[in-house]
Amino acid sequence: MAELLRKVKSMKKKDKSNTQALILGKYEMGRLLGHGTFAKVYLARNATSGESVAIKVIDKEKVLKSGLIAHIKREISILRRVRHPNIVQLFEVMATKSKIYFVMEYVRGGELFNKVAKGRLKEDIARKYFQQLISAVSFCHFRGVYHRDLKPENLLLDEHGNLKVSDFGLSAVSDQIRQDGLFHTFCGTPAYVAPEVLARKGYDGAKVDIWSCGVILFVLMAGFLPFHDRNVMAMYKKIYRGDFRCPRWFPVEINRLLIRMLETKPERRFTMPQIMETSWFKKGFKHIKFYVEDDHKLSSADDDIESVESVSERSSTVSESEFESVDARRRSMPSMPRPASLNAFDLISFSAGFDLSGLFDDDGEGSRFVSGAPVNQIISKLEEIAKVVSFTVRKKDCRMSLEGSREGSVNGPLTIAAEIFELTPALVVVEMKKKGGDKVEYDEFCNKEVKPKLQNLSADNGEAVSASRSLPAYMLSDTD
Figure 1: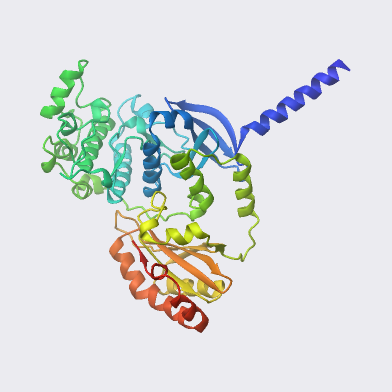
Figure 2 (figure 1 turned 135 degrees about the vertical axis):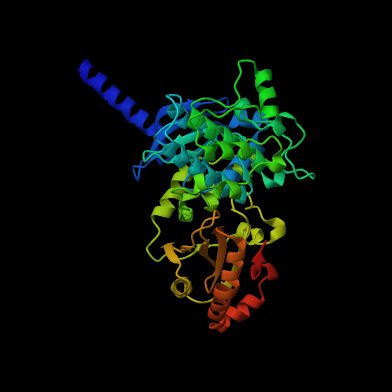
């Protein structure tokens, strides 16, 4: 009898442990991967899909006491901007009473640093990693993001040997540039930091990242640092002077490239396009074709936005059961669903003066229009437009992604997200936003292809047109 009671207690304890391990009704937490002052990173598994992810768990109380909420919000904003095949992806952000969770891509291969620590790499392998690094960092710069702490420890490798840039904790965005057009925050890792950062006189974020990329290229090819000394001040002096020497086994082309990347005067340092135009870099390089995944993987739902806003604005909480109910609602949606209804918060946010969604939107570029046409008719029209310009269409429920295939641009192909919302039982709002690609190309596509045909669709329904006239002007205009 005693043995039976012990087994029952053991089973109950095991069941309780399994229940606790399921975070927000969605993820099974695994082993600890690493930790810092305010956060721990765990390996986890999506209980539904079986996909492995890395979850960064941030202690909300510590962050609030340290006044780092703005820092957390900026990191979220940055990771939302830089979705690229060679950048570790943020899937979603969630919160409970005491924790904030960053659900991120799990990169299995570990740090590039561990690979270099075993010795210098072969030229072709070093070139491949360098090409992927430059591709990712130049994309960040196009999106107005500057990493400011690039080093092999922050470069991960996936199971296929592809490089992934990680750790955007010290990153900055264009909005932080002062009136002199420069950044002034002293940050970075000493051995990889540019001389102008050490000078504390203001610096160009792009040029600082290019310097760090030059140091990384040297390390990949040599197996040691270009500016190294046991005495930190002596190392700083070498960095100030640009005092380094390439090993004899470096090809001449790499010597020339490094001299221009590790130029102490920022105005004379190579730019990203100049790096990508060198013959050594171009060897075997292909611009990566990629598209932005459907928004369901990017935490754009109102419930998720509200959860993070609650962390930053009010210190109120969202319970795990609420997250589970949100997830259940998403799973229960039928194949041709009724569009999501717009609430008062949504209507207010359509006005630029009250827009609270900037933290989660990529860049605010988009358009909205009102229609009385059936949802399936609107979707068919968007598919028809996409077919004319040879765009790929991806759709789920009342959301669509229109993806171009133009190659040769570091900005990536033009990608547009479209979503349909219910305004009244007879009217819907179609919202379109640029998710990737060039703004000029986006504007041209919207003005020549999308707007005329969608307006004609709206005009087909007299009730929709007359009803739309009574709506506020901001409901029918381009978003800022």
